[in-house]
Amino acid sequence: MLEGTADAGLLVRLRAGEESAFAELLALHGGRLLATAKRLLRQDADAQDAVQEAFLSAFRALDGFDGRAGLGTWLHRIVVNACLLRIRKRDRHPEPTLDDLLPTYDSTGHYITRQASWADTPPEISQRAEVRRLVRETINELPEGARTALVLRDVEGLSTADVAAALGIESGAARVRIHRGRQLLKALLERKNLSGVLE
Amino acid sequence: MTDCDRPSADFPDDCVRARALLAKLAQGRGTPEDSAAAEAHIRVCAACTEVRRDAIVLTCAAIAAFLDDVITDRLPAAKRIVFESHLAICPDCVRYMIGFRSSVELTRGVAAAADPPPDMPAQLIQAILAARAAGEAGED
Ligand SMILES: [Zn+2]
Ligand SMILES: [Zn+2]
Image (cartoon, rainbow over all chains, first blue to last red):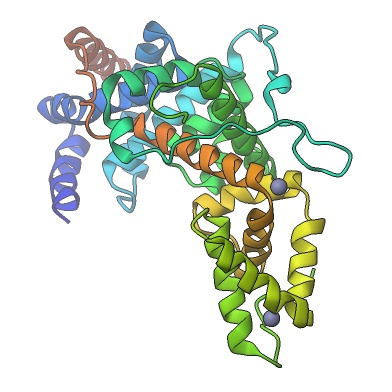
């Protein structure tokens, strides 16, 4: 509620073209959006460019903003789209598919190898800064398609339908990509033997 | 697949109890007595036998595909019973599920509020404000 009221005041000033309102908007949302751009684009310079691009296009679209979503959510969507556009335009480097990390099944559909035992992860472990850093690094090792889908769903918190819309694919295809990303990340984390997580 | 939501009309209470035991076993919390009690009922109950057969017929590969719905609690009840009965007989799927869920939790933790977002560099703020001002001037 409070956010909505604050948004409404800021929005009036933005639409009036008040310079200080733009500075305020950047200070208020810039850091968080830059973090999102860094997670999606991995490179600092790229992330800054995308955030700049996104803010400028948001400024141009202010009159069309209907206020239903809240400024923060609206800006997040614009930044995500700016990042995805950049990822699509990037030169595609051949990258390992990591398919060999996916689980393998025998002819009856059962696991061939014994699956790794994870400790039931206490929530505290993900609060540890070094664990978060390691998980972030490991996410960055995923192949692009799976990585983008997984970051949007599990880090940025988009619904599967919104992931599909952002990527311009069917929702079934988005589900497959998210699932694959989760399976690969689990296997990569196991390979690193994340201490305190594996039993 | 059968309609596993509907317990057998013959012994509805026993079915509910047996399936609760299967669910408990699936979470690794069941005792050998729980397992024996569930099996004793399944032997005499056609509906539960069918659920159990689906659980055995269902492959680990098929079970893995349920996991995205399991961790968000969106697996339809009918599928959940089959899922849990498979887990009751398949330790590998139990281990895989625990790892899958933990891994997703760790991923979600990456954006946790405990990490303050990085500051927006002053030079970036200035660049954006300058680009906006330049755009405005261009429009006039
Ligand atoms: Zn029964
Ligand atoms: Zn299994």
